[in-house]
Image (cartoon, rainbow, N blue to C red; front, side, top):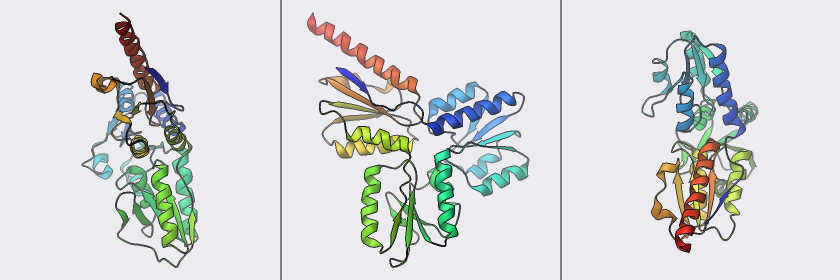
Length: 299
């Protein structure tokens, strides 16, 4: 078995920015409570790493961030890389917290573009995944935004078909999914302006999957269960290669021996918040596994 790690892999710039900002905040205020409201980035390994540095994460999928804020000890509150509702920031300031904004620069650019469109009084469609923190942030900007969920379609309201419409989107969606949505919108709306906001790292990783070497017979998609860009990679791979053996894992210990039988060429692709060390460990394990298998066969 030959192992191919698809590049890029490891953290994207937005993840690096958020982690370094959290570490810097704690280093500059070692005696203060430093907390993260929500998952800083969507990877449990990162959350555990930050906890070892004394930075506590407050996350519960069954509770709102407003509710969780009441549990956060007074000190510094870091808002996640996905952006946040400005009303939540105002609430935290009113309560006396020091605010640190770790929003990904690419998400910030997307939000600024949305503001520009809204200032022009144009109909704005935002395409995203319902309840994803980036989508929640975007929709909190203005009640007049038309929300299109990637699975369910328009939620609550649909813009007039004969009026100019601008479309923007969550940065971590599938390029195949978005292309299909664009095509449908072009049939539905007379005047459509598309702003494709899928970030470069998400796009590059998906394009590598779309152009897999023909001899690849096993693909591992590596990332956290909460990571939408990992889910997009997995969904894209399953759609593009319906007969290929594809497994989504978050770490080495999830790999089952039965998955590796009768395969000769394996590729690894990872989400933008997956630590490089996780991917390297999996690649090393697979290479050793195949050396051992080869030795047994030769004997």
